[in-house]
Image (cartoon, rainbow over all chains, first blue to last red; front, top):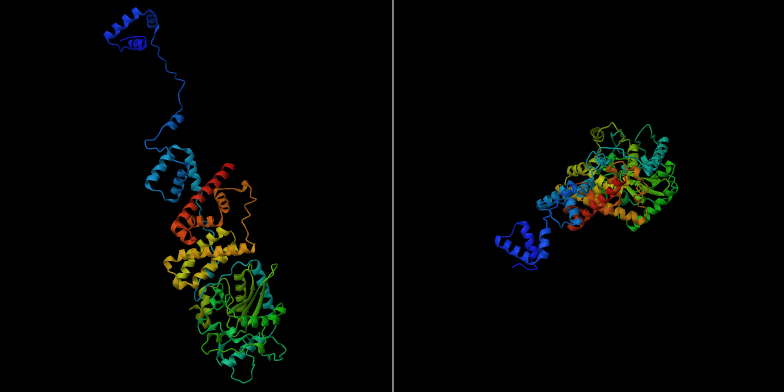
Length: 404
Length: 161
């Protein structure tokens, strides 16, 4: 039934053609009875809007509005970061990888972040290599390689060169040779000269007969027996406890720093000295410190101060003829020093060390090189191969002992 | 591990360890000393180390030696912080590699070590955790934050350039 409240609906339906015949008839009767609505009916037009072709969205904006079939809409920024880093770290699951690809396909910001993350991967600089690799190796005949000396090592080397010069400048090395002769007489064993030719130790009763190691440099001289040097001798067990046969004793570790010594030099940095031992060492060091540089005599141990070694006949140390030396190395400008004692058996004990910044490694290399040069055993040249060195050192039993 | 295996380890891992230490502390001499000390320590326990696990052992020892060294140096107050970057202008950032190195220097020591082990040596999270004595989750969180930090730094500098 048509009335005042629904007449507009009927009018609209009429114009849209949705009224049936009996409804049209009812509508016409209503309009006759209500002329005010007849006027509205007559004036009604079906207005249609034409398309405004100028008002269109850009493709970019439209694409931005589009959604992928399974695109998540609740991805947090943190989750995106996790996905990007996970991709970098290769820890993403298959599902996460697909999710990341979806995100990347529609978001330039995420794409740029991904590029930035790729740049965070550190690439090793393979040109940067450890320069002294050969020095780290262990073995019977390591290859000698001179490391880059720096700073304190330069000062140490200079000092050693100065010492070397002063020693060789003199025609004799009485203390050294007399000392060795003293040892040989005690041990009665064979010794080798610097030319590696074994000679029989003297059996004479005269206590200090000079046995030169190098005829051109060391003519026979009587030992200094004046007895005016009142320094205390080191305890014999300290001097010679460093080697027992071919085995390293406790507290001593072979140095990997000093391959040019063919394994014969070792460091006792961590030697657990007793209080008594320290005390004796201090007494010994006092006069040495005072006159340590630059004279060569400062570095010698007078024969009467040498401890009496207890050498075993089979001890490979007997092939060496070097008395202990005390060497002080100072790092210029820093006041740091290393006092090292090079033993008769070529063992190297660090007696005092104030060398936190001191280039310990290079200093020791310098020391060992100095010792080796003095003995004439090893004079390294860069052209010399490890095999050549091995051949030349082949008769050095002590090297074999240490290499085990 | 035999002597020859030890020497093989030197050949195989000393360069990597050196790069790792050097990049961490940026001091050539100290890095060399630490590498040397590390192999010396390894040598003392050479009989106890299995060659197949030597790399992890070497890097663990190297890392701990480095930390010990850093602590000692800091205690004595002469640790040379990486100051070279403080006065570097953006004009010097010639390439991404340089920028990444700058970013790396901004990280703390632990972060730097983690990311170097990860990227330089390709260690897994588990291995890094073992070397650095951290939990697995700590390593993961650290790497996440480090990557973010590096990305932010690189992004900022790239914008400046």
